[in-house]
Length: 302
Length: 265
Image (tube, rainbow over all chains, first blue to last red; front, side, top):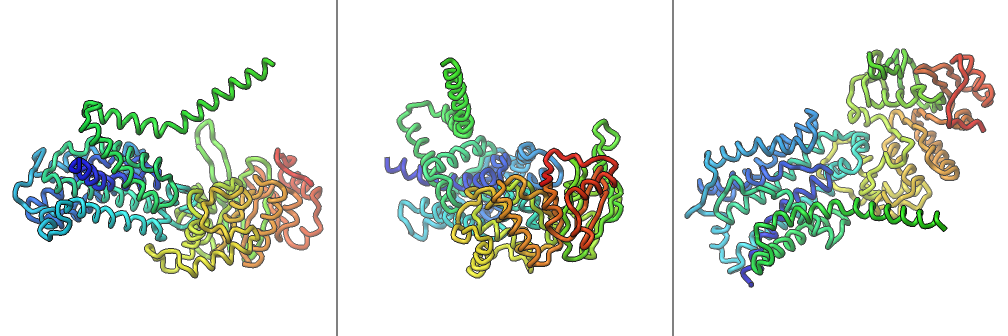
């Protein structure tokens, strides 16, 4: 049981970076960024390839750089070339498949055997004992979350937030909204790639299909977190996505352990959860409308 | 200050929806001019503002603001010098951000060495609170609340402050009190007049209130069919009544002023 909670905590933290990225793109910028799946694998591929050559730590930074490049491609497609934002993400994502294969030396998976990873290096310091993986992951996540929160309170960050809130106002404040969208998507995809990079070194492998559906899972975590902690303020939202992500991984672990559901069903369940959570305001409205109609009919009969 | 020369704009040219919005329009404003604009529906009043603010590029003609040709400048590059308020009080502010954050964004127009990673400092906060207090709405005590919680009048007053906290070369007011209740509208007009006069801002204001058009500012333009049909200022204007204005409009435009929202009294 302890082992399961430890794994759930670790995975919850490491995948929360994807939810942070989605918080930035989906909530703050109000753009559904479907580059996510591809940039997750990109991060994984770059970081594992670097680790295979003996550079695990530079691998993380290279992964983030690669992720932000992917984000900038999506951003240029939608801001400069008029491609609708969802399509822009899908196009980049499709193209990334080839790029990811290239990053992995044209093979669909690579494994680290005896090469060092950031985790093996950290284990040698002896900090955290058995929890060394968790400590390193949470350290990375806390740093990323702090930087993101800090960034969103700077003047540039404020302009990024305003872009999703009221785009006309941004250009009235002498800021080019194309620039703020590009910056936002670069950071979001750098975070996603960082998540992939850490996962890759944790599992000591990278797989070309490792990112399938990650965008929906990330959104599920975001929504679970918001349900628990609410949507007030940037700092609180960043904490809430981490908590949401941990809760999701615990649910995942429980399903896996107790076998209430066959584990193959989990993606379907995740989709249903995300769809209904996003649809719930509209459904509530419709129910309210039907009720109002019924009452109006009743009153007219009297 | 502002010099518009022979600006024309036709929307959807050579289609069934072709609409000539501005026809060879010329206009020159002096520094400190406070000009009110009235006109029929579809006369091109808002189109004129859009041309100045850069929402589209005119088919012909040029626009010079403060000695600089801005005809082809994208909107965000003009906004250093242009403040604009719309009829819809929701348009000028970001609802999910706090009052303070909104002001900080507007203050970016000051643009003196834009420091992207600087945060709102204590002195910024004091500066904002001082300006908010001048609005007399108690907003200075609510600076950490999201703007979405404010009433329409409060949001419009805040937008006005945001547009003028760095005094622009020209302020464009597009019926900015039309969506407010009469009492709030009066208050916002009062604020507008004070801020414009105090800072000696050159200002264009579209209104459908004929009295307001004559009372406020020093010059009145009447527009019809994409043209300025009557332009009156200073002494000549002071003696005018609403009735005179309607007669002059008919003389200039050849038709009576038709605006379904116009207020004559």
